[in-house]
Image 1 (tube, rainbow over the protein chains, first blue to last red):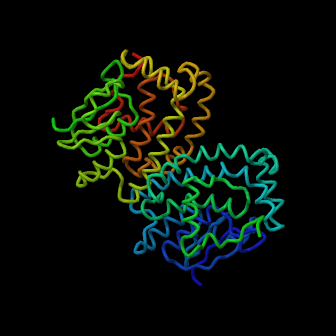
Image 2: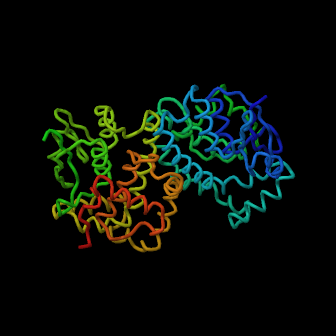
Image 3: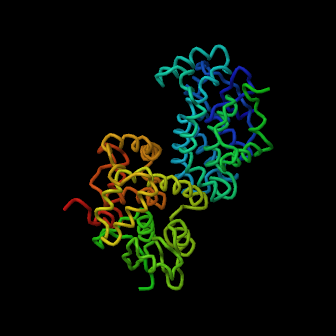
Length: 231
Length: 231
């Protein structure tokens, strides 16, 4: 197939878990563009070298390679402008930039709770690299980082309040129907859901209900991913 | 004049300081719509009763009264759709909802640092009400709330990181030129600037440079407001 998406997976190649890859997986489905998923592991830097990237997602679309989720989303919007819009116009594209930044910070807010669980489900050859790089970046061990997470998750839930307020006012971040703003926000939740049994959200949180809807989108594409630590 | 904006002021009626009123003041300028500013004080609930509101901003546009900054922005966009757009399309309007929620939370993040300074510049008849209601809501005195603000402002600056990342990527939250997304974000900064000498931002912060640009917008409309605690 002429269109390929390089995506991060765990030891189980079906367990796709990168928050950034999930943004693009959903964006491709939104545009109705079929693609071949190419499983990638963290230490396979060589594989991406021809595409001038060290990280996924990388989209190869015919002769074109694009890396970085924000660049890929913009490429898809511009190249397939006759298909359903990801941004809903120029204003949406600009404002999605800030939502994207907020979601990137969200990844850092969630990370301490789940890094040890991510480690446990990685491909064996990725585990040492992951532990070394993450412990160096955070200045703590993966196991220490999650200490007291049952109590500390209250801070995350407070931090998420702007998203909660939005979803009390309208069905999706993108308005009446989901668009890239929703895929931006969904990525970190899917990352956590696929890699860790730890529940980030209270059952009565409007964000929880929205996440359920996102899991059902595109014929349950995200719901079908195998989960770590659960049968 | 047929168009009036009720705006919160301090003891000096020229010192307009509500973050929500500033959103609308900028939105009206963006649309090129002249208006008469009606100075309002916190305890003048009676004045707003004919407009079915207890808070400002309230926009009176001919026969129509609209309260709540989000509702007013949407009213302006729909009613004056032939004028420069506030949202840049349907996607921008939806995503601005979340930026609006984030900015509302920002008001709460900034409040502890400046509430005592706000109190000092209020109209005398507003001071008791302000102190009572804010101390009840926060569970602390206005003076205690600002204790150690020189150190604690580092937390606010970290919290603002999504806005900083955005302004490193593009000139305005709304893209190449300011739109309502920028007025949403500017409101809390102008609120703090007008009421308190305490500086929220480091001089080399991209948010600082953006704020300067916003102060220059519309012939320096926001820069012209008299500042408390400074001559």
